[in-house]
Length: 259
Image (cartoon, rainbow, N blue to C red; front, side):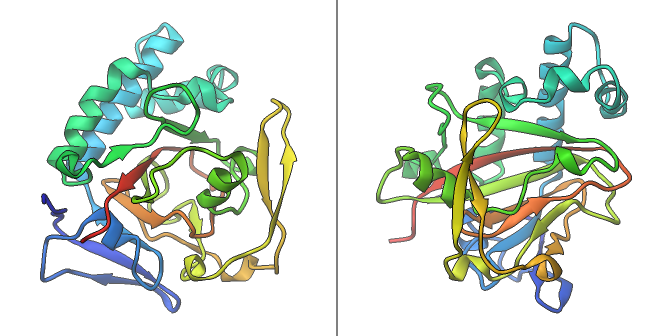
């Protein structure tokens, strides 16, 4: 079975963030999401390059104008373009672009097609769900609240193979590297937290955290552009808005446990 090869990784720690290099360069996504913290940060510059090109192509096609660089995209999304991409449906990567991403995921070791691994399609569109996000500077309303991805699957009854496990991958394309905006609670994948649900303005049911206050225990995932966060779908996480516009991309992998 093909295994994951990275130039290195960074692991979150309850004592802060600590850089660690692996002696073995063969870590699979499920391994990376199953450590004590429930997440790992891996170097993925080649994947980031592919992802950025795909997002820019999608954005240019949808906007009807050329946005050839991430700075051009940021300028557009900071102003006139934001209302057009506020909703998730507008930020879903089109099917005609997914083939290039799938090839990159296989080449970089994120997916092992021989093991039947795949990118999930939980939105019921009949195709993989890969979407990018934009968070404007100093705009808390643009970020998602604290949650575990597992809650969406449980609440909405999405189909998923019983013999596989879910792993989330999150890549920043533009952010303040000194002030990352993905917040995580290390180790939270090891216990259950209470949540309720509500119906949003689009009529979609969403989970809502309803347990103890964990605000002061959340830490920014120590990720920089050119890296990716690989995390357990039970891990509590959310976003925050900083002084720099953030563009990121995310998707969920269906991974085969080791036999």
